[in-house]
Image 1 (cartoon, rainbow, N blue to C red):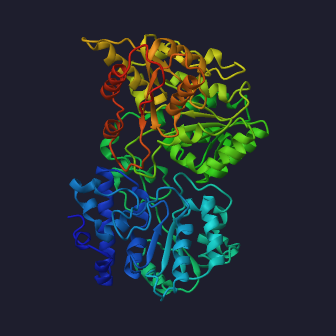
Image 2 (image 1 turned 180 degrees about the vertical axis):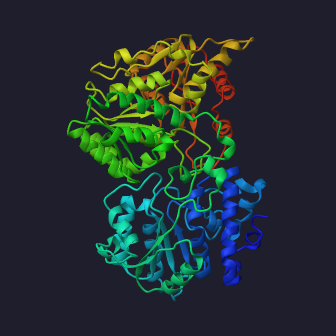
Image 3 (image 1 turned 180 degrees about the horizontal axis):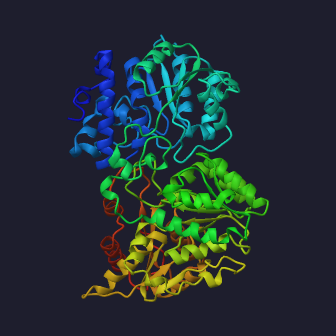
Length: 636
């Protein structure tokens, strides 16, 4: 039976109580549990398989939670969770969803931070160690012992990791930085530092230049990072050390994947696919929106590579999840750049390419674009460079609280000079991409890559509203943005439903419900805005003339978002000219909150983002005033 020894581990004290000869069996139990869990549930299995022995050794030697362990990104914390009272969340299929895939202090006192983005562990560890040393030191009254940061070689490409190393060397005091070197990021490692890192591996840690020595840090190397006895011995030697040290541990990512995994394309070692494992039952599923529309975009760009040498696709790691396939990367050659997990550099790098006359396309997740805010505002928008941003995974989702894409509209639409577009079909998406990367465009453009709602509608053949999209491929040569004006998809009266991007199918469905009401049918106007950084005041004025209620629907945070701008516009309009008719405005969208693995259907109910809830609010708004009533009455 898998996990017989693991099932008896309720805390790190149980790991310490084992006979040293039992540690390999514990590691074997953990590894077989991870493999079974990955097949049934999915997750970051490859990275966790690589750190089994390292994590067991850490909990054998150190005394969590007094000794503070900070896992970078924390996607490799499954083993840590197993050893800190949560093993049954991996052993029992009925309990698989009890824990998140990242560390979370609400789950356990052994988890220091909620983490899901990369490169921050060393900085966080520096802060813990600083406070400990200010309050009495390692043996003082702070309650904090050793501070350990566990970071992968791929995460070292993140700028903040270097900032942390720089600070650690100057700060001094006890701080142990464990570099888990499995020779991989999500895809391969990219960057000049990886050559010296490889030479350190090849030389048993003796080669120079040594990146860590250059920072003024002590350094040790462990070649067999999957040998639990060797790791225990080394960690015992550095425990309670009085100065910062880097422990460079060479591990094998995905160690223990079996033949069934190999048949699904996951193998040990340098294998991009083993970064994230879908359940084996998902093998026959159609690609999701990210891969579908990402591959579509890459095909369109690749057709232009031969004649447009300045056209460059940039991915700060995570290429595969966004449809940037390995085959595409190989064909693209120098017209594809993986910057490593360095989103800020990627944005500034893209601006440099554009300034020199190139046409860069920077593709990453909405949640990762958050890390680039300063560069998007300063290096890109302030300098008016024609950088195209492909924003994947935007909108509400059932993901964990570190990977939500619900904040992109509020963030990007409020950057001066950044044109923000939200296509509602694949054809619309490609037209926008062609325009933004073409000679007619002279500024930065963010395109919200269509999500699952749009893809579902297109696959069902229900996206007929896009049969005659103004601003399609025939209009991409226009000097001005072809999407300055909203598109009226269906004309009606009394009520206007404006559905932005992925929320457009929801507006269509709500209009259908209003029309099908046998007691009091309403033929609503349905509007596809397509642009969310600026308002089409002309269309808004036209709607106000013969519509009593205007509803905005957006797949993102309402506060600071797009719908509030329309509410404010109508309020200002009424205030400056009281004789003009103003409709009641109803804003529909997400709340301002972090959500953790809440199903999308539940979120839509919570936020009133269903056709039934929207039509109920429309009926209430219609009832609250007569057609002659003046003044905007926002309803958010």
